[in-house]
Structure formats: C-alpha cells, structure tokens
Length: 378
Image 1 (cartoon, rainbow, N blue to C red):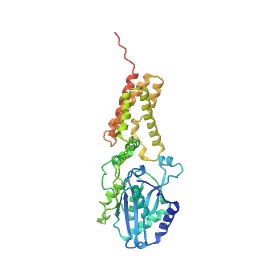
Image 2: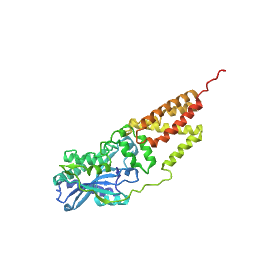
Image 3: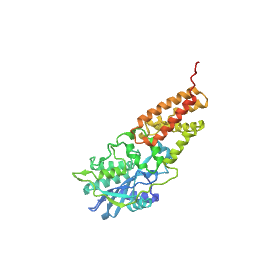
C-alpha cells in the first residue's frame, strides 16, 4: 500500500517533479494515455497490500511517468513516533515509468495496467490536476490506514477531476475491514497476530470504502462511465508469483509451543511472566488508543484479553495477598469470558483462541492456588 522513496538521488527526483510541474501548460496529444497501475504484494511490511499509481504516457510529447501518492521519508525527524501517532506526512511524487518498472522488477512484484477510457479533455484535466498537486501543499497529506492512503488518494483525484463518484467499491462491501485485511498477512504469522490484536472497533465496520490496491483494480473492471466501460482490458505489464516466506520462528508452531509451555510448566514464575507480558501489551494498547490519531487503534476491545488488571493481580501475588490475588484472578477470568463471547464472529477469533485458552487455564490455576480452603466443621 505504501512505498518507500525509490533509490534515486534527490536531484533526479526534484528534476522530474519540476519538469512535470511546468508541463501543466503542455497540451496532451491524441495518443496520450492515462492508466491506473496496480502493483503486486511484497514481503516487506510496507508492501503487504500492494501499491497504486497513475501512469501518464504521451508519445507525442515524449514522456512516460508515474504519479505516486504513497511516498514517505524515513529521514523524517521522530519518524517512528510520528507514524505511531498518526501525523506522519506522506506526499505525492512523480517518477519516470522506466524507473518505476525497474524498481518493481527488482522487487519481483507484478504490475497490472488499466487504461482510463475517458475523453482527451478529461485526460487533460486529470493531467493538470496531478501536476497542480505536485506544485502545491496538496502534495502532502496525513496518512490514514483506511481513509487516506496511496489507493484512496488515487480514487479521490480521479473522482474529483470528473466531478462524480464514478469509482465506488463493487465487491466485499458485506465484509468488515478486518476480514478483508486478514488474508493479506498469510505467511507473516506474527504480523497477522499483531494487527489482529492492536486494531479496535473501526476495522470491524463494513468495508464500504476502497482502500486496498486490488480492491480498486477489481472495482475498476466493473465500473461504467456514461454507460460505457470506464477502463480497458487489464494488461499485465510485469508478472511474478509471490513467494511465501518461510521462517523457523514466524509461524503458528512457535506460537503454540510457547503457549503450551506456559500451560504445562505449572510454574508460578512462568505464570507471572506470562501475565506481565499480557498486561504490558494491554497498557500499550490503552496508551496508543488515547495518544494516536489512528482511529483504527481506538476503542480496542482486545484489552479484555490483554488486561492491565493482570498487572494488579501480579502485584497482589508478589505481596502474597491471597484474597485479592484470587479476586483479581476472578475479575480477569470474567473479562476473558466476555472477550471470548464478543470475539466469536470476528475474523481473528481462531488466531487468538490459543491465547484465550492459555489465559483461562492459568487464571483458573492462579485462582485455585490463592483461594482459601473452606473450613470443615466436624
């Protein structure tokens, strides 16, 4: 979905931007073509979902370039904190098509092209709009995982130029954003688990907006404009089969092994460490929910599993207060049951189920250890 700066010098990038910026006054020829490019999935975090660009090719004016709304700069001060908070600035750039093609060839990622079947006048308007963006503050935008990204920005610029919402989502509108996202992490188990538990209620809404590159590609194939197809037949410019990565640790087996170890160790220290990790994760979720502007992180019900109250239980256990350790074990068990019932119809139910079972077993064990025996009167 998002792409790093191509490994070119700043001089070349600025030169290209300046060239296209001045070309607003250049009229496109009748042979000019404007296309939406959809790029294949990669195995780097930023490439899990693919990428979207707009290609403008005009042999008559001897240029062939790609506009990209998914650029960010790792050199941004406080990059990680800005990304986490949700105020990291992304920006539009332009590259030669040759550089774009070579980059994706190097990354072994496919490229699909869909030519927009619009009039030369509309092509000119879109071309001018793309260049105007590069020369204005509109070039910069605050990235939002669902609402503003390289794909949604392409949808917006085309719709706004044509003064109509010609591009709308045509499939999977009855699925939640979470369900749509889940398969994209196949082969990256801990990324799949991590995003499942860090996202809150927003991703459980129905996915009515186009926010992923292949959603846009599939919707364009079904879109009509003036009762005619909006795009031509999809062309494959570059084709690779995505390789599923293999890792000795990033898989479900290490996940299950760790949880089985916790269950069968029957060790107080191991139990405390397990609950400490869960509680710290829960505290992180709470902090991010208030700190971050990413709406996807707000209202995170996964804190019922990663409960900060587990930390309170640990503290009572450390100070050997059996009564309150028992009470907080009971409270956390009730929260866990609520979480289980709430999660049954969610996409990440089965990936979190082993955690739920482990937590349930260890909470019951903790409760039994600290429950005062009932005196028997003879």
